[in-house]
Image 1 (cartoon, rainbow, N blue to C red):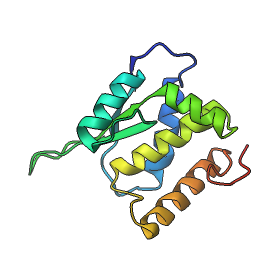
Image 2 (image 1 turned 90 degrees about the vertical axis):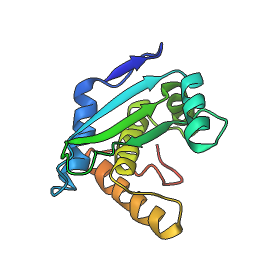
Image 3 (image 1 turned 45 degrees about the vertical axis):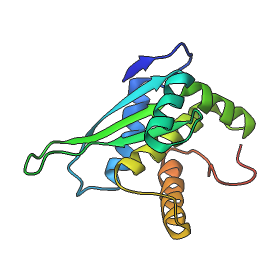
Length: 149
C-alpha cells in the first residue's frame, strides 16, 4: 500500500488484503497473487487518466496490469491507483458507506487487472455480476442497485 494523499480514513492494509483475497478465491487457477494499491490526490489521478486513457478528469480507480517478459513467470497482477477524494464524493452522491465503496473500487479494479472489462454490454453484465457476488460475500449490498444504501 502506497499513500500519496492527505485523506482519512483510508482502508487498512488488512481490509485491502481481504477484498483482494475474495477476488483471488474466485480465480483459483490464476497464479498472480501480488499487486500494489496506491492512494493518490486527484491531480495525480487526473494526470494518469489523461496520459493513459485520454480522459482529462480524475477518476475513482485506475488499473495498470503487469506484463511479465515472455518466459518470466512472476506473481505480479499489477497496480491500482485510487483517488480517495473521488471515491468519497461518489459514496456521498450514491448514499453508500465510504468503506463499502472503497471495497467495490478495489474489487472492480482488481477484476480489470485480471482482464475483465465493461466496454461492451455483455462484458459489463459479466463483470458487474461477479462484483455483486464478491461484494455479497463481504456482506456489502449490490452497488448497482438503484436504492443501494
